[in-house]
Image 1 (cartoon, rainbow, N blue to C red):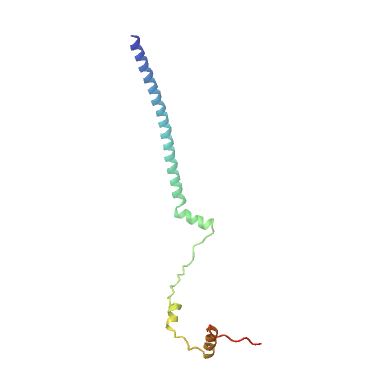
Image 2: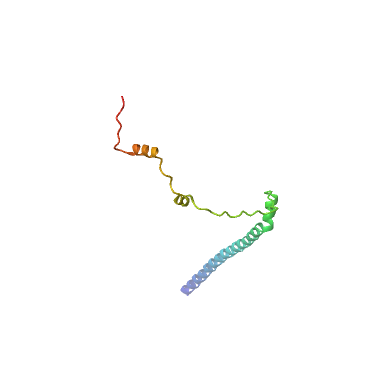
Length: 121
């Protein structure tokens, strides 16, 4: 009889402990659900605020009043430039002038490694 009373008491204590554990976990779940609800609400509020801040009418009003920007009275378009030949293409098509004899002779004298002038005294 004592053994069965001990088993019943142990079972009741185990059930009470399990219920306390479940109750504690339920409180944690409720707190997390409340945090989730709060975060979702804040996210929706921030998305609405972002949508309002990025609306074209607000951006235009901000540009006009705070930044003192104005819409142009007319728009001038720049005409595209027709690109001509490059310098390299032009240089290929232009013949070189004939060499000047004096310059050619002086260049050959300077460039010749075998030509050595004696020193004057």
